[in-house]
Image (cartoon, rainbow, N blue to C red; front, side, top):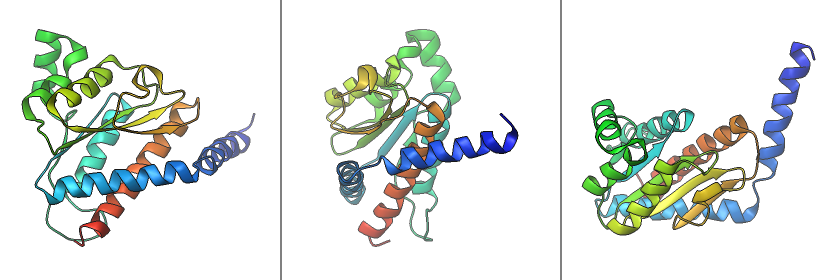
Length: 191
């Protein structure tokens, strides 16, 4: 396969996955924005987490709320649980990698907050434990998952599942959906 054919293959896969986002999923995206907006309006905090590329996406999306998405406006309370290397390495060393996000959420999360967990496979134990901790802290949980949802399927209060086997295509949809949610939040909060 030459370079152009490989490039076209990637664009075609992206387009196919994008077209698979149905009305039901779009309603879930809208619902996620409503829940997050309500939390922020009531002085709640939005927490994000993920591993690898999903950790990077959690940082990016958190920053869209703290900084800005489209408008210069007041900052919104948003934290990526993947951002503090001291906390991550301490918790991983002392309690195990499976606890790196859930322990932070246990300390910081409260009723009225929202956690958004990103996992392309849905099988990350640290994401599963974070969703479980969210229930204990009465933090509303939203999961962005891929493939068949893995062990995290049906563990969040609201789940947005990208039905693809390609990690790259799932991550592309997760970041797109996250940015759409940020846009909706700015509009809903009239910022």
